[in-house]
Structures are given as C-alpha cells and as structure tokens.
Length: 73
Image (cartoon, rainbow, N blue to C red):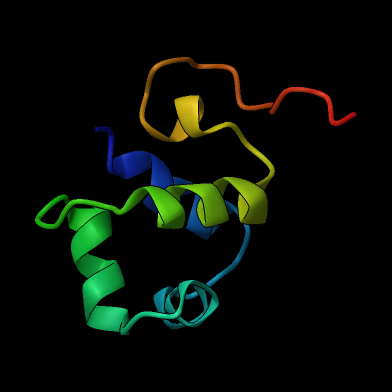
C-alpha cells in the first residue's frame, strides 16, 4: 500500500492529523502510524478516507494514478 498518498491528500486538503483521526474515530497516534506505514489501515477507514478526499480507494492504495472516484448514481 502506498502510505504517502494519505499524507499528501491530508496536506493538500489542509487537514491536521488530529482532524483526520477524529473524522475516522481513532487516536492521532494510530492515524500517524497509518501515514508512516507502520500500521495497516482497516478497510472501513479506507472507505471513509476516500469519501473525505473524494478519491477512489484504488488511488489511495496506489492501484491507479487517477484520483477521481466513479460517478455516483
């Protein structure tokens, strides 16, 4: 998984680690470990991050370089 992407997305959207951690419902230290790649991100957090940043999970996990999510129905 490409952990640098979640840090870049956070910074690009002017969020602090604390704000994202609160959004996810976890402690800041836990979120920091996600960004550093020392802890695996649960799928439900990946879903929330993709919604927060309006990008696909595929983008977050580095399966594509295309940020945009699929059109909503």
